[in-house]
Image (tube, rainbow, N blue to C red; front, side):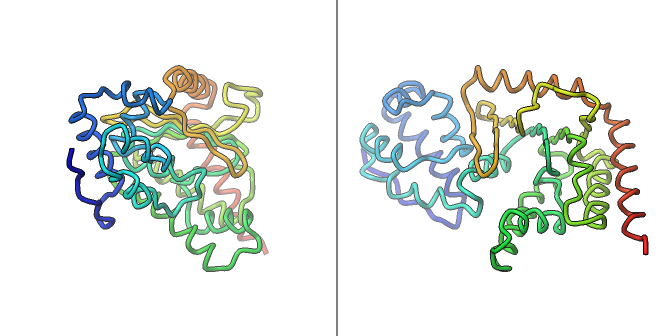
Length: 280
C-alpha cells in the first residue's frame, strides 16, 4: 500500500496522524480491537489515537508501520505529532482538554490550571522550581494561560470543578494573589461559564481523598480519566477504571457544598484576602 505524505507540522499534526491511522487501518481491513491486540492496547486506545486525543508513542508507531505496511510513515511523523510545551507526565492530559466536550475535575490543593490567573500560576511554578530562570517560568506561565483560553468559548467545554476547601485556604502568592484568583473563579461561575463546588473540611474523608482527579468526555472517542501526584500523572482509558473514577466524582459532587453555597463561601474568602491585603 503506498504511504501517505509526511505531515505538515504547521497544521494539527496529531489530528492528521490520527486520520491517517484510521484510513490505513480501514485499508488493511482491521478493526480497532484487531490493530490494538498485537500492540497490547485496547481498541478504545486505538480509537483515541485516531481521534487525536492520545499521542502515538514511538514504539507503537514502529509496530503500526509493520502491521499496516505504511513504509515508515508513522515512525517518521510520530515525533512531529508528539511535540508539546507541557511536561511529559501532563502533556497528553493537557492536549486532550483541547478536544474535550466536558471536563470534570476535583482539585485537592490548588486552583485547577484552567482556572488560574497569571499571578497565581506564576507563584505555583516558582514554588515548584525555585531555581529556574525567569524565562523558564515565563514559558510555563504562558503555556498555562494558553490552556485557560479554552474558556473564552461561551459554552465549550463544559467545566465542572470541585475545589477542596484547602484550595481556598492555602495562601499561594500572598493575599492579593489569592483574592484575584478566587474572584476570577467567582466571576466565571456567576456568568454561568463553569460549575463550581467546594468540598468543606467538615466533610472529612470522601471518595477522592487520595488525590486529584480529572474526567474528560469527547464527541468521537471514549472518555478518559487523569489522576496525578507530585510530578507524575496517568491518563486512564480502561473502561472499568474510568467508570470507577466517574462514580468517585459523582460521590464527591454529592458530598460537596451546593453550587450556591460554594459560591458564597469562595466570595467570602476572596473578600477576606482583599481586606487582608489592604491592611497597613
